[in-house]
Length: 379
Image 1 (cartoon, rainbow, N blue to C red):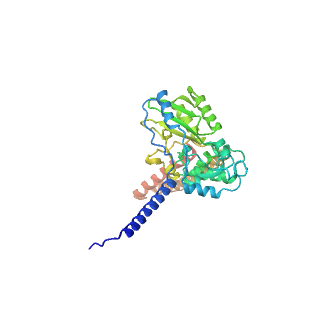
Image 2 (image 1 turned 120 degrees about the horizontal axis):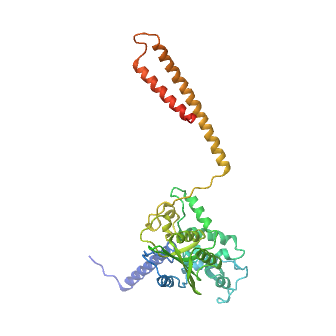
Image 3 (image 1 turned 135 degrees about the vertical axis):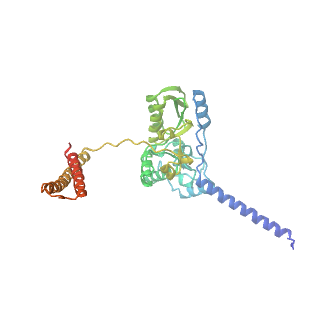
């Protein structure tokens, strides 16, 4: 049986359903914005060969200005938590004139185009003048940076996109985080790279997204290892051999550069060919499975041994050799005594002086003891 519903009651129920749907959509959008960074780096395409024109065209499509805007609730929360003065220049805010240079605005600790997430935890308030002068540069370039912002930057960098660290998967998660923090001690910048199957490597340093110090380091490393192909106002492109490319690109990663992959090899040979992989999960990086790609373990160089450690190892080796020699001599003396007993019994000229099986066992024991003693004495 169906009951008819009056028009006002049906309209009221419909409004409730619309409000509920809007609330669920708002919660879903907040959860998505809090969980996923704004600009996800896509899977780097394979690159059989690389040309300057193709590389520059790829950079032009990626190196575009972007304005990152936080959700309204996040902006309100950051502005409400802002004090009376700008944390960067220590000048008081002028809230009466919203468009003035002293008005508080929203800034990010790590720019989304440098791998930072678009969340309220990555945001802070400063004056418009400081934000425009800083732009996308790292907070470490700010003179007399407050300790609270330095700690916030360190936390956000661990939650942002990071490259792999050449450590075995058996390393603990805190040790892996410490290795990432060592990288984060330098300002972060953005570099473009392509590695082709034919052995050609290209590096592009753009004038956008980063500070002058980091860009200068990238230009210096690329120029020393390769040769410039194009130098323009907006970017510089360098050509490198495959070995030099692998060495320089990991030097840039260790200098906290966010290397954006434009092209990669079809067949990845070892750990070094996985330079283009990034992940916002430290656990994925430690396991060597960023983005679902299985990365082989790095080939680690042997660490230099201290002279004191070498002395301790030599002393321990001498102690072990002396102990082995003493045990071998004792075993030989016991085996020799048993052998002498068998020989003396044979000299008695009896029909059956000893058990034949016992003779075989004593002879085998004497042989083992003799070989061990000769090895301990170095013969």
